[in-house]
Image 1 (spheres, helix red, strand yellow):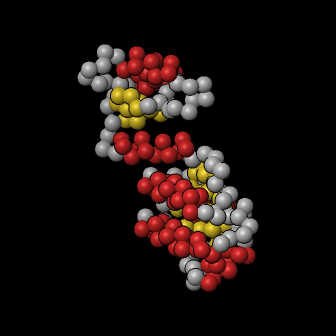
Image 2: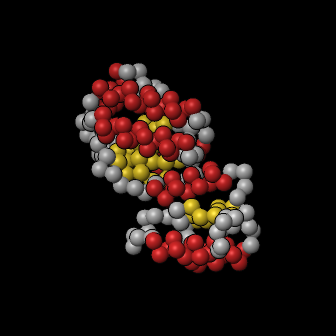
Image 3: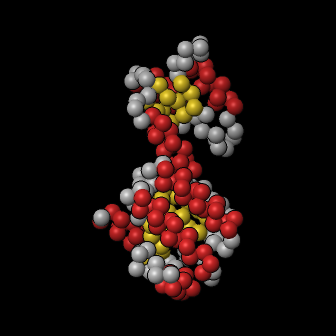
Length: 193
């Protein structure tokens, strides 16, 4: 829920926030973002005390800030197919659980695309849960590599199986896509560039 504190037709932005808080579910899955041109610290603090999740000042990149907040709110999401979390402002890690069907892969690709468009230019796939890899899907890694490269980022694989290693080699991707023994080593490599 995005609330503008000083909408011309709203009597009181604070009342609107109160109404939004009442509508919120018990798990707080629906987030409340307040945006405003004000820099009044007391008013901003009052919004946080009411229970908002984020305050975004209205400036030239307010929409980017809202997208980044939404993405970071979702970065700890668990799917049957993957678990996603952000490491920092530009590195996102996916622990892949299933990589064995077009439906699963399309869901992962959609989520990676969202991550890339919201500033996470470096993507790490932890493949430790994928024991057997069908080389039919090797081209997906080339696509992911290209997507990250276009955003001036990197795509890396961690803890890959022998079948994946062989599939990458057969597709001549083993020299293009770096692989690492752990997420920490991959993150260190990104940060050293």
